[in-house]
Amino acid sequence: MNESLTALLPETMLLGAAVIGLLAGSWLPRRRQWTVALLAVAACAAGLVATAVTMVTDREQLVFSDAFAVDAATGMGRLIVLTALLLVLGMSVESVRGHRRETEYWVLLLMTGAGALALIGANDLLMLFAAYLLTGIPAYALAGFAKDASGTEAALKYYLMGALLGTTMLAGTALLYGAGHATLYRELDAGLSTAPYGLVAVGLVGVLAGLLFKIGAVPAHHWVPDVTEGAPTPVAAYVTTLPKIGGLIAGYRLLHQALPGTDVNWPLLLAVLAAITMTLGNLAAFFQTSVKRLLAYSTISQVGYLLMALAVGTRSDLAQKSLLFYLAAYAATNLGAFAVVTELPHARALQDYRGLARRRPGLAAVLVVCLLGLVGTPPTGVFLGKLEIFSAAVDGGRTWLAALAIANTVASLFYYLRWLVPLFAATAPAPLRAQTVQGRWTAATAYTAGALSLVLGLAAGAVLPLTTGPLLR
Image 1 (cartoon, rainbow, N blue to C red):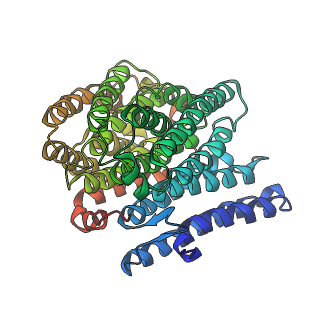
Image 2 (image 1 turned 135 degrees about the horizontal axis):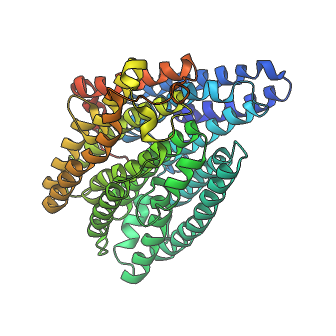
């Protein structure tokens, strides 16, 4: 049994920083609670260094009875999650500075970030469910952090949906264990090939229900717009980004490693769910006037595109590469848009952004890059991510799905332009108060995320090799 703790340094650093931060925050005066934020940043930076060293030295391994895999997908997933977590920390500084529960905020972010990392490497059903809980429970508390009416409602909806589908996921885990007589993916692959069809199908649907909730896909998407609108904006940025990274990589690993030989036609199920998710997300976003709800439905549509990689996970060699690169590009681009929204806390509706290009040209530029990036406009990273994922769908025999995704991409331009056009309005700009900025840290985060979105598109040749490599069994 390989019980090397060094293989889990990024996860250990986040959890260790959470424990130390909670203890330190109990003694620090309120004006010095920012020290815990520095500790969180240091933990993320150290995790990035540890991940880079692991990837450079090719130290791929299975640890703790093979329940956790450290391979190429884990390494790239860690880079995405830790970088995204740093961006969330940056856009949260002004929002929680001096708050009486500031320490708790940073600790909860660290814990749920560690849960996202655990999802990425989960190679066992029980490990997968434990990671689901670690990702979710702190996030429920973060959704209601402001303790106002909308935040409380968001947290309650988030919790109830998570508890219901988490229970469904646990039941599905029990059924798959009963069918395959194992929880380890490698052993499940052998056991499920001869198991009763109905038992495997019901068990798989149960496990997928939890993962679909985590990523915000149909039919487990109902919480996304309400939580995105009701939670503090940095928390909304978190829940629409990091859990999706962990959930999608975890789903890809589960389907690719544990269920390639079953008779259950899960590729068709995933393809249909991808089609419905991207279409529903785009249609629901068309006439939204709230910027946060528009981004919420945009997130749902993006998940639909990402699910295409899971649908062809065992049929195309491009699936893993396209999924990981798209996730990296989406994380930077989505967080850039949310950082602009965070920087303008009083601009809640699309019309509140009228004339922003004249008053705040830098923020307007970031918003243009990020919104056009979410459409898939070159030279942003999402453009290449979509190109890769559409190619994987065609290569995997799902040409119809790729065609539908292209049609949805063209249609999505409509609602992104509804936001972008007011930026350059020549007359009747929004009231000055609506475009009052929050602070330098959030603005710096917006510029950083926007730059990352462009860099991923321009320097994709250096990033794509990091996304290749076999999954360990």
